[in-house]
Image (cartoon, rainbow, N blue to C red; front, side, top):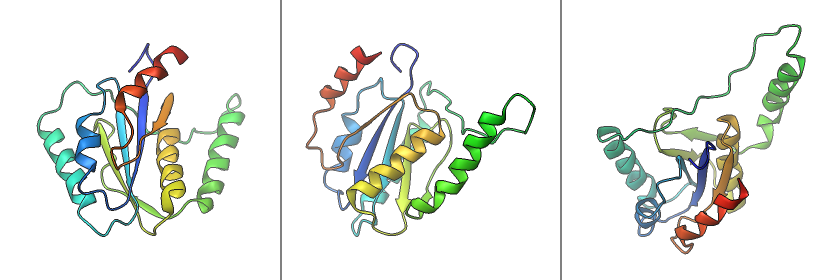
Amino acid sequence: MLQGKTIAVVVPAYNEETQIAIVLDTMPSFVDRIIVVNDCSKDNTAEIVMSYIKSEMVSKNEILDIPWIETPQEAFYNQADILLAKMRMEEEQYYHPYKIFNDNTTDRIILVNNLVNAKVGGAIKTGYKWCRDHAIDCTAVMAGDAQMDPDELEKIYPLF
C-alpha cells in the first residue's frame, strides 16, 4: 500500500515454471496483491504458484483485506451503482472463461487459471478484471518470465 492506495500487479504466465518463483520472490512489499494469471500452462507453473499460496497461508503477515465489490440493493439514491453492476454483468461475455484457485480476500497471491489459452493480452485483461472487481486503486503488469525489474514499480509512487 502506498499513501493509503491499494497496489496490485498482474502477472500473465504461460509455461513459466523456471521463472515464476523469481517474480514472486522479488515483488516489493508495498504490493498488496499479486494476480498470477496462468494461461493454460503445460508445465508446473500453476503448481509452483499454489505452493507459494499454501506457504503464505501458513505464515500470514498483516495482509490488507480487500473485499469483493457486492451488487448493491436497489434504493432511491443508488441508481448509478445499480446501473454499473448491471453493466459489469453484461460484459462478462467478453472475457475468456477462467477459474480462480483462491479468492480469499486476505491472500497476497491470487491464482487465476484461464480455461482456454487467451494469449498474453487476454491473461492481462483477466487480471485487470480481478483488480477492478476488488476495487484496487493502482494496477501494474509484470511478465511471468522475470524480465522486468521489480524496482521499476517504485516509479508508481509519485503518481499518488
